[in-house]
Image (cartoon, rainbow, N blue to C red):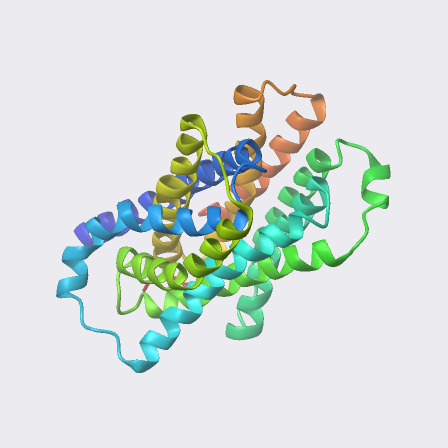
Length: 312
């Protein structure tokens, strides 16, 4: 009985944590818009990784001293998930946003739950339930209403180009990271895995960021450093760990459904911070997104859903 209660508390914490990470990532979008053009993008990526390490490494250090040392295969796996979870998403995002519109980018990002569950089917032969599929479709339609501002013309004029290709690589990389990260977290905790990932990402991104800083330079104010701190300490550090923790506890499929909440939080924060207006299509879209998430995660509808890939 106590074990069941602990399991329920852990599951509740995982859902709470992934919701919190979605909120932080939603704020990260606003921060990125505010800092855009002030800091070279690769330099910003390197600083974010360093700040993420600063906040997570002291917390993970006691666990890292007690945890077994990774063997050669596990070191390789850690490098792979670091590349898939941090380096490729950071770089592909920067490249993609230079080549496409914000609306097109949002449409591509909205495919994350579908891509993740497709990979789960291809790798593990596990199909999403009918209600999970319906939830994905409902949330996707809600996001389409928001991104296209309720205009069919915007959707009909959507075109695929090199920018969309880069952003799809971003989505695919994050999906693979969530799946492969579960395997390594069978041995290492979510916190230790997060730190190892950030360390390897720092090794890759710091030279790139230093090269770009040397060639372009920068001039950052105190307020802009506060924005960078948010993107590093909270987004690259705390939110990254919270997302990995949730993947480890409830699986990449369920975690991916919450990715659409990032857009809801991002738009809501834009209204609060940037004083943007809220139109009727926002309410309609938000209702569909939240309904889709609830539908996908309902305990009643998830009865009989395969437990893998989740933490056993």
